[in-house]
Image 1: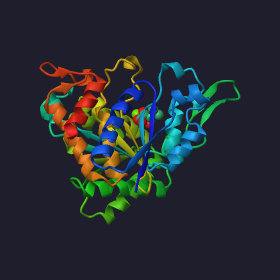
Image 2: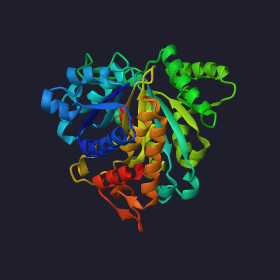
Image 3: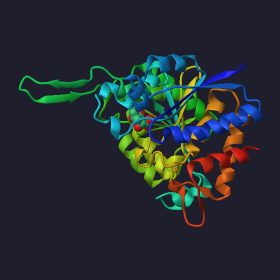
Image 4: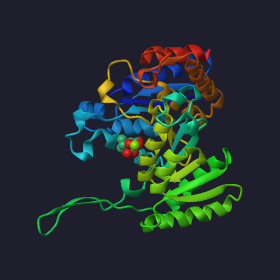
Length: 358
Ligand code: IPM
Ligand code: MG
């Protein structure tokens, strides 16, 4: 059966990097009889400019019909003055919420070829392979009430609500434990249970799930300590599971351990493994349009899509091997370039991956 993929290039470097990922999908469709069809849509600032909203109804409909969504990146200084309700980021948050993509998988994997690109010593990061499982549709990102209000004395006050239902904690917990079963069978749940009641409940529920997975080693860590441990001794972690906001912060930190935020893909999944796939780096407006951005995180996001949503693990392996090969061959975009390697642009890197597929 043909699977439908919605392509949402978005803003900044989004269109450039997504174009390379589309080349990879096209290649697999033509040469490896991958049964897919692709449709393009607008999201973020590009959608605001064209249709007055970062997530037009038409895009949402296409996303609902699709089996998987590939997203580039959203946002840029051009749209920063806009009201928060129509800023590009709202397009992304709207897709997560409307499609119920509660499970965000963010691998922090060090490619051995890039060990010297990390700001940490090679022996601290060599072999690093962490999977961060971030809750994506709840917590303080979506909790009500929220806003900015005026107090009786005229001073303004900003407020947000951190809230998790037991069922929300349970479903993300199960995702983390199931993933751990296929890896090194360790889950570290990150919270702030010493201060926040909401995450006291989080810890209690995680402990309860742990009882159903006796073969998985569960530990708990406060988020401040987790941030420190990530830069002190990151290899102690296998799977980390945490709230929406803690996951946002820790995943950037973990990504940088690998030296190359331009290399890391992500998946955001619903309960039926329908998913949205995107590089974890942003829209990088400073280098947009120059053809110098690294397309590998987006290409690796396609591999995650094939594995998690399209039931095509062999094609996913093929892509990952191709990326490995171009790195072995010494090709590097500017963000991962070091002495003695060959600096290439976005399209040249994409073409090299396609060539390595065959
Ligand atoms: C991320 C980003 C988003 C988030 C922004 C762009 C809304 O930082 O995906 O990590 O905060 O979730
Ligand atoms: Mg983030």
